[in-house]
Image: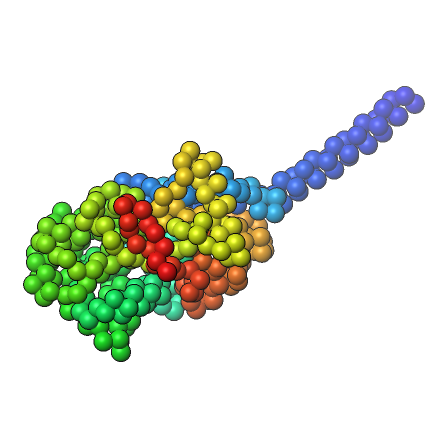
Length: 389
């Protein structure tokens, strides 16, 4: 009798144990980790952008590391400023680490290389470099940096107010240089401003003397560059050496401390468009970007032990916000093709997601999610960026 009772009790306990184990297993499956692949350039000529991107990602993790009870794992690799390495990194993350989404990288060529892998493997890409692919080629990507036409048009408005009639252009000999040049030519249509040059150089070049000599000989009222990071300082240094006195302009890809340090006195007075985060404290309290930007600054301080002083780290932070918002709406089990498809669909239909650079609204056929709320014009005065009314 005692044996029967003990046996029945044991069976009951075993059933309870199995039930609890099943519940735990179910809970663990329900809360399976999400995986984010992060590719940036910690070495090479684009590292002056890639390092701030990494610091921004640290801020993002400090800000929030879970979605709907699921923890988020971050897998990070350095592409050494090489597009081929960026593509290999992306494939490794997808094939071996089973990431659900990729965020990266620091340069447009690298981002385009990752986009090709993302399209092939049907893995969503949130590009933090300015990269755009038409139609189905870019169906698995969105781009956070403001599109060149949106930012260039703000600069052209300032040129018109300053009575600029001729402008010289020098940019990188890559996709970013092309984007800015094409946008500039469209923006000046009907404005009375003429673009008088189209000089180019590689990001790794040590001199642009020949290109700048051609520009100076044309005596333009202003010069604008389609460059980024520390290599972007070269034209301004060369212009100063040649005694150029006209107004100088740049793009939002120049807003970082290394550019200011390398450019020194040669970039004093530079006007450039940028995202509102750079002058967040000067925004009205009613602007939703102000609050998110201040939250970003607090998270950045916590993660990196210093305040942010660049525009690039905030793009990583915004990419994280876009991912968090989309992941909360995505269906399926992380690590599966079905979840990646659902996550992609959620990303490309994001609506009114407030970030530090913009309030993002994406559409399936539009890589960019920014509008006029995502831009201000700033001027470099004594090494500090000041809002231009």
